[in-house]
Every structure is written in C-alpha cells, then in structure tokens.
Image (cartoon, rainbow, N blue to C red; front, side, top):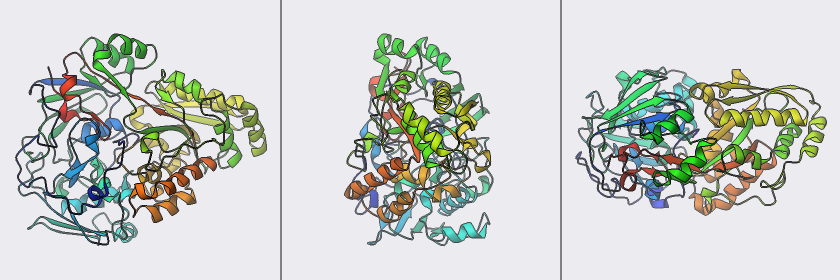
Length: 557
C-alpha cells in the first residue's frame, strides 16, 4: 500500500487456502491466546500519536499506511492477521468468521460462517450479507484495492450493470445462518489476504452508502471505534464496547488521540514526551540525534518490505517514449537519495523488495542502467533525451509535503533539468497527494511514489501498481496508466499457484518491468519506530511486517 500493510515472508500454503485449518474458536470472549500481544505492560490510560494523517477514512477508499495503521483496529475482515509483534503477524486467523473457510478441492469456492452475536460499534448486528455489500461499495466506488477481488465470479457483470446494489453472482449469503459462500472464476492464492485488508471488512449496508464518506461515521466491527474531531487535524480511537472476539485482543489502552504535526515537530514532541509515538520517520539532522541519544526507544528495520520509485505516466509526453523513461533510470544516483533519507535507503534495481527473497525477488544483476550503488550516467541520459525528440519539453514533477519527500521531488526536478528537460515541481499535501495523481484527468507526468506490502504475495506489488485491472479504479495506484503485458499474463497464470513454487516466474515479471523502464526504482527504506518514555517498548511495541505498528498492542509502563 502507499502506503499499507506489509510482510516479510509468505505464510504456508495451508494458511493460504484454509484447507484443514481449524477455527480459533467461535465464542466472542476476548482472549490474548496465541494470537494476542507479546504480554506484559499495564492496561488502561491514554496515548497520543503524531501523524501525517490518513488520506481517507472510508475503509474502501484508503491508500496510505497512515490510514491503514489507524483503521486496521476499527474494521475487521472475515479473516485477519495475528495481533503479535514480529513475523507472526504474517499468519491469517479467523476474524469475523468463526473459523478459517472451507475451500473446495479446485480452490475456487470458499465457505465462511460468521461468529454469532457480533455487532458493529453502533450496536448494529453484523450480517452475512454485509460482506457482499462491502464488495459492491468497493467496486462501484472504484476503491484502489478493488482489483484484488476482481476474481470473484460475477464481478464483470456487476461492473457492466453500473448499479451500486446489483447482484454479485459469486457471493451468496444467508443472514439466518451466517453462512457466506464466495465463488471465484479461478483459483487465486491471494484471495484470503485481500479480504483481510481494511477494504474487505464488512460494514452495515444501511449505514455505509454507495458514495465515499470521510467523516468516520461508517461503523466497523473491531476492537476500536473512531471519532473524528477534525479530519485534517485530530481524531480519536477508543475501545469498542460491542466487540469481544476470541483470538483478537482488546486494546491495552483506553484511548488514542491522533494529531497532525510536521515531522520535525513530531520528533521533538516524542523527545519531550508530549507525544508517545509518531507514524513518520525522523528526518534530516534529527535522525542521527535520535539514533544516538534515544536508542533505547528507537527501532530501525526493513519492515515492512517496500520499494521507492519515480512513476512515469506513459499516456503523457515525454514519458510515452521508452527513451525518456530509460533516461530517468540511467540518470538516477541512488546514493544521493540515500543521503536525503539519512542513510535509511538501500539502493536497488528491482521492483520487488529483498523481503520477498524466495518469493519472487531475485537481484537483477547486472542492472541494465548501471550499478544502483554507483553514480548515474548523465551522458547516456542526455543522449536518450535527445533521441526521444522531446528535449526541452516542460515537465512537472509531483511530490508531497511529508519530509523528506519535498527534497526527493526537488532532486528529481534538478535531475530532469540536467538531462535536457525544463522541469518544475508541484508539492501537494500528503493527505490528498496519492488520490490526486491517481486520477487520469490530473495527467501527472512524473513524480514520487512508493509501495509498502499489504500481504505476503508478489501480486500485491504487481497488480495494483502495474496491471490493466488496476486502471478500473479511480483513483488508481497504477500511476503509469499503462500495463506491462508480462504483468497481466503473470497475474492470470501465476496467481492460482503457491507463490514460492513459481518464485522464478515472478522474478521474470520483475525484470520485464525494469527492462521496459515502466518505473524508475531507486531504493528500499529502513522504517523507524520512535516512542516516548511512557510506552512499554519491550512488551508491547506492536512492530511487525503486516500492521507496521499494531496500535492494539500499545501499552504504558
């Protein structure tokens, strides 16, 4: 996600398909159990978090990690991920369903049964039919993650009907028994991961209309409930009194207040214990200070797996030309960008991150554009710009205002000027940036983007960012507004198979994107987690590859 959710390694095929997986229990009592927190730490109290803020509050419309971290405890899917720290977050467990689904031998039919007595935060009972309603909203509104469930039978007919409440033939439900049956057009090993996202969580049909809403009024079934005081300045999460589910722990704190501040202000407020956690990374001169002086409450890890690149819109000049896209790739000096990140960026040539080793990632060596750890080839880039026939063209470089992204944007602007374009930069607020450049009518030529893994499957990188199917969403994550044939072919051929068994094939897709200069990748980020002295970091930091930080686990000393 841009970004969202994350993973270090694929879970076993048994967890993917649900075959033979026993329920964690169908009672609705809260339990930390094997799916609970790391243990320790007191319960109660309040914490304050600084954030660049969600891009949206509607669960089917979110795009960013800031939105996901906040809402993953508000909206729970039929299946969900373990609430533990570390790699155990990769494991799928029952969420609103009382057990993992039964799956047909051909892998195309999933049958779920809702836990009895589950309620949304407003007290409304959760109904089996609410799952279909969520899929209707997601696809009718063109939510960014809609392509992940295109595989549900009848989704094409639903799209053609252009009616929000048209039937999706592949989903049948019985509100009396709580049974939900989902039929796919083909086996798809990412399906369960996809419906475990916030965008796949059921919401009540009567209170989640067929229009995007940004006021936090859509009730969820989750450990937290949300109240928005100001969508751009402050919101709060409190314990949901109507939610108590075996296997999903209750929050350890009573209240979380989230406020919007600049990254430098957040950093200083954490240092001074005015904030307890920040969703962003300390930037500039603050990072070495934090690492040296506050190491006991600072963490740095390649978690979640991620990739940073510059998008190039292939439907607009000059990046409709291969030569122009190649020029950008040749010119980039990832070492300069690593300095902007304060040393947290690891140069790369691959689209998939190293965290997917054995699951699609194979280091592209040699890189067709030169050593990622070496200088850019400016002379070659200038030559290609001349060959493109578009030398001297005006280009707008898009970026957002979250540090250090303005500096990244300025770097690209200066680089484009150096190789023969006439470039200027355009900076938007982080909250609206991805939704703006993801609209075809914006015609954003080139700019900043990144992706943080949502779930353990290589399709999570390729499908939303580089497929034809992703272009049906508006806004879309596919900022190229084009798709590589190798990506679309692989999604058809490889999705039905265990990713580990076809890792070499996914690696070929990665190389095809790089060879065609569909993207201009430059690095993988080491993410930070910085806490106040009030948080019991040893027992309940919530850091892991799926949730990034699981706020359910936060606790005070």
